Image (cartoon, rainbow, N blue to C red):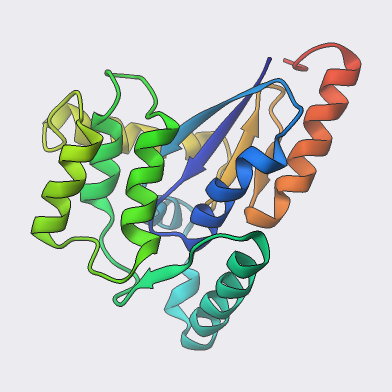
Length: 202
C-alpha cells in the first residue's frame, strides 16, 4: 500500500476540489491518504510569496475557474462571502480531531471542508456555526490547547522543510512532491509507476 501525504489548508478552494476528487482519481490503486492540515499563510511567509487572492483580477479568475472545475467534476462550490478568511480555528479543530501526532480522518476533513465550501456565502468563523461543527467533528483534544497550536505550527514547518510551497500538495514516500489540484493525474501516474516497480520507491 502506497502512502500519499495530502497537505492542505481549508482556505484554498483548490484544496476542496482536490479533496473531493481524490477517491475517484485514486480508484484501483492500493494507497493510504494522510490528511495533513497546515497554515497556508505560514508557507507564504516561509517562501516570501504573496497569496494568489491578493491580486484582484487573479482572485476573480480563481473563483471563476473553481466554479467551472466544480461543475465539471460534480462538486458543490458555494464559497464564503468573505475570502480570504482566518482559517486557524478550523485547522486547529482538525488537528485536535486526532491524537497527538496523528492525522485527521477523511470524515473530519470533509465536515470542515463542507463548512467552508458548501454553505453558500456563510461565514466560516461564525461562532454558532463553529460550535455546531465542533460537535459534529467531536475532537479528541481541546482545539485551543497550546499543544494543538504548536502541532499546527510544526506541521507547517515540516511541510516547508519538505519543499512544500503551496496547497494542495501531495507527497509520496519516494520524495516526489506535486502541487495543485491539477497535478492529481501526475500523482496517479507516479503511484502506478511505483506499483509496477514493486514498491513505494522509498
